[in-house]
Length: 247
Image: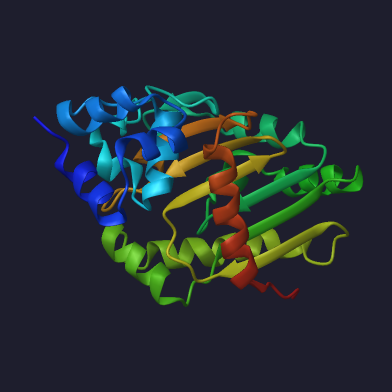
């Protein structure tokens, strides 16, 4: 069976088999087999021929389009937890305590951190005192997205009150060198807890409280993309958030 798309392209451009062969760096017989027997050239040769004809290489030879193999994991993935409740608060604290450059938190409230470790503010001040930049983004309790999240979780006004409690917990940090606390109004798809090159991602699942949703532990790797993707998400929300004012 001939490759009609190739033959039509050659005819439209006035190409002979020998002329196309010269441009692609093969013999004339090879081009004849491409056109008349639907043989498929190697990718490099196919690209040269397609460029000469002004055609898309995959339109001329669809079989060259190889599907991407599915990955069963990511180079960035360290561990996966079925729910946040499986992680003790000490795991978050240990992560923060080892940070030397960056601590980033993006949540609506996450009051479990202060409830499980009342000295969290002291830890953040201590890290900042050693040169670590600390950025905390918490939800604006008066925003429409926070209210909607509460309705979806069936917590009613609970999440709004938790956001206000988070503001109360973090407000004493306002004005501390190298620490900034902001309030955001974003739709939150994941809660993020970063310490340098490590990140805990708490997924948000519709109708489910965050403590029942999965968490994946990521570590930035040279070949992975997950870590950087989530950090880009943090930066986008951070850029729109407003500073929390001191009392």
